Image 1 (cartoon, rainbow, N blue to C red):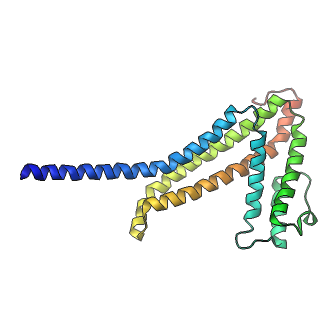
Image 2 (tube, rainbow, N blue to C red):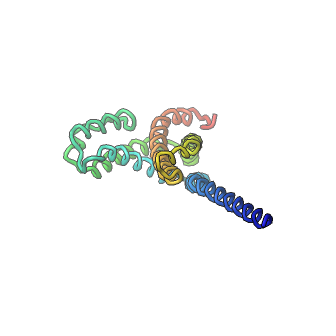
Length: 221
């Protein structure tokens, strides 16, 4: 009887250990899936001869996020929305300002397209002065740095989330479900931040980079 009790207790312990390991692996799955997406992005950059199309995708994504942030409660843009969008775009993205009359009366998709086309026109106009190999180096170096910086911050934030998530059970909430939901919300914010900073830094630093090119210096110096 004693040996059966010991065997039964041992099986319970083994079962509990298995459940614990399985639970930990489910938490790990969340961050591992995110890691795979980020590493795929990095590898595409490293393996590509040119990432100009990806750069333009970041531009489009960022402008779309800016405009859509004004459409949370409405499907159309108010005059105030257009003014606020213009203030941000003219201050952070464009050299030659857009005006209210350029965007008023447009639907949200047309607003996005108008800003995007203007940004690409200005950016490509400056980029054409780069030698091809330096253009690629410039875009890759800045984009990789943005991705790596935000990814490290995200890992730290996910670690903090996981440390405190067990307290959710006291509020009758499943900690794993909360971690998965909030982790992916944070990951969506990460992708938006990468598009934002890639867009802003490439636009901001192209003038400085052109000085190096015109002086015959190497971009990495």
